[in-house]
Image 1 (cartoon, helix red, strand yellow):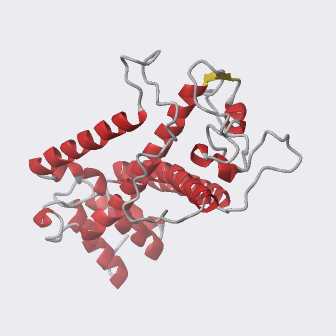
Image 2 (cartoon, one colour):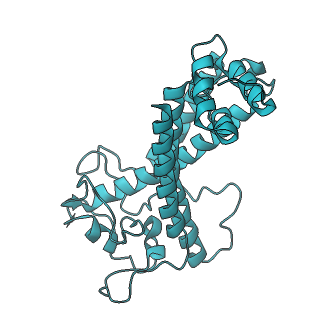
Length: 288
């Protein structure tokens, strides 16, 4: 069970990572043999401005499938699926404005997933120290949120409210003025919220540079969405920290990992138990 779960998660993540690495190469373009309507994928990222002026989102205009939406510059394909991949047919006969909303949602969730994956690793690295809520938050990162004090919840809720209110004002049409609910503004570029760039990374950059890095952000977000699902699943199945589990597995293999799970799962402090087991494995004194 545990090893199979880890193997599947590792294989899936490796496959997705290989795909994303291929996508982030800046020279990826569509084959020259395709029709003239097909655009450089770099220009299509985030509804880029190169050659896609005719693809202004309009409620009511339809596209037959995801390939047509990719050709129009509304969404970005995924290498090696340059025409896009849509296993569940969400883009079949899709309205152009709806495709714009899907693109924005994908970018937003990708950004959140990138923050979440970093948060998992950092949270487990500093847990038990005074840096993190006076050492009161411990154990697998999937359980950290339930341990934080009420003021943190209130502050986080207020931050989410402010961010979402700003997103609505920036990107969404008023439900009282729009032809239907959940329509974004026609001139909104998915993922672009008032040019938010606190570090100034895009300052004085040309459009080609921006297109390439938009594509990289999009696809790292896609990878992060897969990764955070795998990370959460592993911790829910094992009840143990990601970092500790990986270190024990690397040092002594699957037998040690199974032994650590059997010894520590359900104990009063699983994290302390797992750390003690890891130390025993490193010292060669653990029996499994």
